[in-house]
Length: 372
Ligand code: PLP
Image (cartoon, rainbow, N blue to C red; front, top):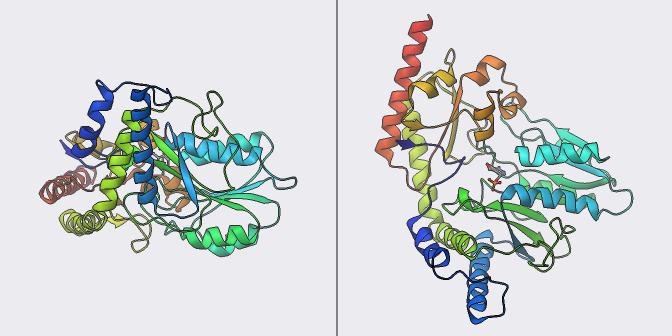
């Protein structure tokens, strides 16, 4: 199996698995218990917290661990609405956001929030003049992701945050696909993260919050995480997240250079006839979303079952629905059905990627001949 689905999830780093091991086996104490073992577990979580915060690299705030980035995003959006000042009832977001943002915003709209969904250009980027036009003193929050999960395109987060702040609004950044891969942009008040996209375990995420911008609690109970997010923390998951963040931080340049080389090698191996979906300059290059005239991408997936790649987000691949991101770029039904996403990173071997790309190109070519 050649694994090319790094946006869906990433392989757990050996260093991460090793760091988690003792906390899965004999070090089982509750980190919120006053016993010596409980204190040790709590101390391990605090070390992990520092690793995640250092890797984030933003000043003036800290994180609370959550069960996923989806939870962090739900909390950021719903908890900010709950604390909103009188008259601030608008949320602005973008058509290409992840379902965690879009579906939560739509739910909030059903509860009475005034929601604005901004379009993107054919390159997948937000036109800041459109945002400028929408910003007014009723805007509570602007939510924009840094790196898109389906097409890898980046948005100018620092400029967007500055514009939101000038209108008296807060900014939420879904940095799930950016964290550990590129430097996080300065400016947002709330940042959502996930461990399993950076070679950490599934089932743990975090919300970074600028001091003073903390949303109202979303999960109530034992008062953990400074009373903001109740629930017993998992030392194993938090330690795993910390180890993954530390590793990503230490290897940042090496991982980045590796990905740039892989991108060039993949495009060369695919050969002519493929079009990259979205901007080729403003992007993270570990995400190669491409289309080819006349290709049936679902058939391509079925014909190459020993290569793990996808049709977009894991959710879009499962539903059979054309991707909302590709539609937002202006692709028609046929073009989006002929698009595939190849995701690669730290543990991808160049010869595996080249082999997979050549086979994908050959099967696509055979399809064209068959359908001609
Ligand atoms: N946001 C983006 C951009 C993602 O890619 C994902 C995961 O696919 C999420 C949010 C949700 O993350 P989690 O799996 O931690 O809930």
